[in-house]
Image 1 (cartoon, rainbow, N blue to C red):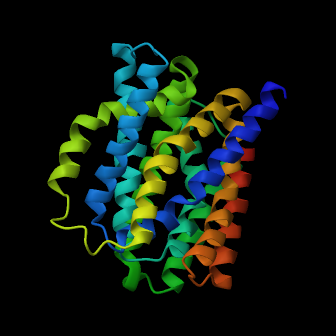
Image 2 (image 1 turned 120 degrees about the horizontal axis):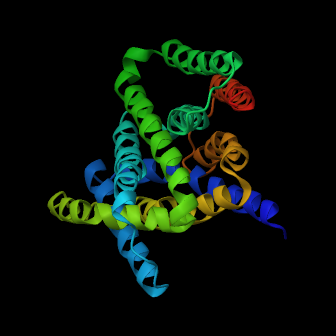
Length: 287
């Protein structure tokens, strides 16, 4: 298999893994505090990532790379997991997955900012249309009832897009999977004490689905998915492989319906499809 094909395959595997993140988080926050969940998943993944770095004798990041690693840690280790965990206390995972349709667009916007690119006017047209789909859906469904959840999901998408773009840029020099591992290790001195501090007094009431959710987001969403994702970005190209994120909402909606028995309405499907079309158009005219 050539390098480009391998990049697409790795990127596809990464997106498929990420698609299970929101349903798994939804299952976990039913019995676990969102702050504890965020800190615990990052700490578990950091310990595994640190062991991987040591076992494979990876070189330490340079001082110049530390600020970028801090941005990645803020975006994908702390920000996105925390904001989505908090949001999923107010909205269903099926509802939240609609917002994920904007993630490729947000990543592209930060890629433009960080890379100094000059997209064509059509890019911004598709950007506005995609945002209109999401805001229109929230308003149509009763924005007051889910305003907190919707705002938290928007914040999650913004910081995740920043973390993806910064991580993809950094992976060219530091290495694909090494970026997420070092970002996790960098966040560990904060996340581990926070996990211990926010730990519930008893786990007796925590049911099996919550434990499975914690295990999934710790092992797959926080570490293994990024190993495939950043490797795919490096092998196949950030702009090209990044478009695979457009499949994530569809995977996520299917998992929400299959595993959590949540209702996926026709409106959810339509707005997700609309967001995906707009993001696809925006990416087409990004350069």
